Length: 129
Image (cartoon, rainbow, N blue to C red; front, top):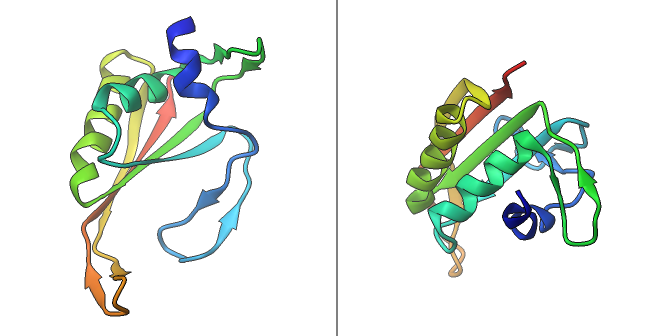
């Protein structure tokens, strides 16, 4: 459990939640976390982080992080596989159930100013009671 503390400590509360339906709209909701995964970190990092959100953990400074009720895992492009595997690991451990899987193909701005579509997934997990 203490091995998860470094991975979990990078996320601070209150969490900013972004809605896929309304671009740019954000809200802060207790017990709800939005975890955006990238292809830059390992699959194990995100699997351990997702598990830590549902189990709670004590970080390096001795602060107790309470478990969350809902976790939204989202990934773009190459990170879709990582998002799916992180969600699968949480379900396999019996910590949560998949409530919703949403896919989209939003337009992303490139550095040259043009736009291009990019595949996106958002998996909503609810903690098992």
